[in-house]
Image (cartoon, rainbow, N blue to C red):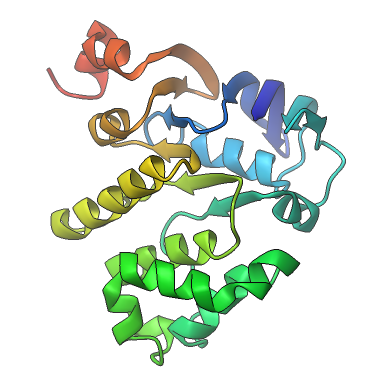
Length: 235
């Protein structure tokens, strides 16, 4: 479904990604792993079109998307859930959800059905639907950005650092929701520094270090790797 081949991305003179490549098959959950600053968010932004790729190629559904603008990639079904609970703060929860559906005709047609689905997944959003998003807790905002992404009917859902700054109880709710989506067949690319949680969810994983892919394998093999155990799990 998604194929990233040897992309190079820079912030001005600083090269952040160097010849990075990975793939995601339809129905898979693939983890993009690494510590803070490894390049995970940069990779997702490059796929979304928010950052320009210096060289290399990105294909989605067997078509090159290097030339597509971010809005065109959204309409193609590439949806990114940003890190840090980035909401429209002065819009209500309900208005934030509708923003998720506004980029695609099909998503807009079934917006009420989609909203019912995502608020069943996160009941607190239904209770707070008339509240401004800025009044939500950090965990509630993370639920909202995930729900907003689902409103767009993603063909590939890219979730960036969902564990960032969350209390353990909220963290479990977020990952339980991702498990439900997996069972429903949603294709997921998960960028996450909590390696254990990510690999418990994902089929496969790629490890980014200093902007390069240094490992790739099944989740089971990565969890058993000495490098992963020492560098990321403290074992």
